[in-house]
Length: 132
Image (cartoon, rainbow, N blue to C red; front, side, top):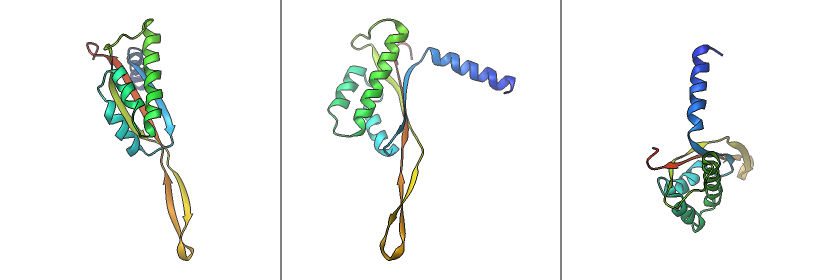
């Protein structure tokens, strides 16, 4: 690894120490379905976001709720204290496309239809309003 690349990697690693996030990889649902749930909570206060996810009918909301609880726990672990009401917010959350499993389904007259089983990666950042 070159010096410039190493310095950039170290700088990125140092900046991650002051950010509080959780990441969920290889969720077996399409990114489009996950983005619909994630868009509901972007920018919300964490307790309100947990309530929104709890009562959402979407199946992906259970995964996002678990991820949000993990991000809150990471924040509490790094700051050595409990999060107070109205203090933490979902600052950034994004969904990336994961691997796609390609399968074939039998079709009439000896043909085969392609099935794409998509997956996604979700990254969720929490922080305080004045820290942004």
